[in-house]
Length: 241
Ligand code: NDP
Image (cartoon, rainbow, N blue to C red; front, side, top):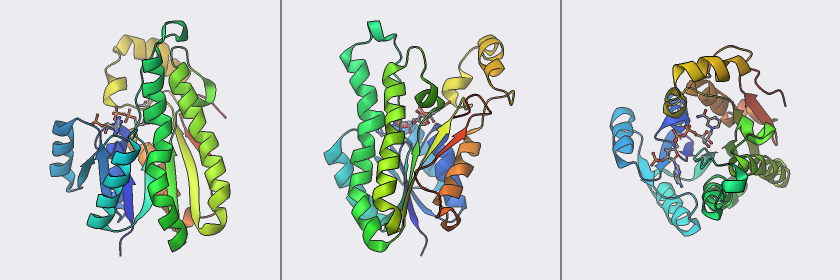
């Protein structure tokens, strides 16, 4: 039986590449999204991967949606906590709403999405929790105190959960991407990319979403069973943690 993988925010950007790569590697994949029905429908028709609309910051919604995923596809063996948002503002101008939207989506989702699957993974003696953080959670970033806090928080979460589950066949790891050529980053004017962003990246280019996805496929595999509580930086050398 193919293992079942749930990818949050799995219909666009980095998550889309992760969903496709896991399918290609033989997993039965469920892709979650928040509200962009058009992008999700396009993704579903192109990939044949079922999509599940729910808000990862809503504990009750996650619990019932994950029950539905398990009823449709079988117990979840791999969770990729990828869904994330930014609400950038200098901290002295930031509203509590901008702070808490980012904390809820990027950090509370560690609880809401992982909690419903962890006991099943423990009982079956196998599980992979893979979390997508960010270089800006490691080094901090102007205008992103909310995002940097959440993305640093997930690293602490992964280390604690990894220790709790190390003897149970369940590994918990983080991938920390640098600048990846998603729609959002491609929308930055070429002049800004070339003068400000690329010069910070020793490899001399943006990363590709598929390069993050390859890391996920590796960490999900049986061969990665000795890796837990670690953070894999995929950032072209921009920040060496
Ligand atoms: P995108 O904005 O391209 O896609 C985000 C995905 O997450 C979409 O599928 C979106 O759904 C979903 N999503 C957002 N909020 C929620 C929510 N509350 N509940 C459920 N799904 C949600 O993001 P990226 O691909 O750029 O980023 C993916 C991850 O990688 C994020 O965690 C991000 O912080 C991280 N990252 C990205 C970098 C980059 O350069 N792009 C760099 C470092 C880290 P919908 O389509 O419905 O909106």
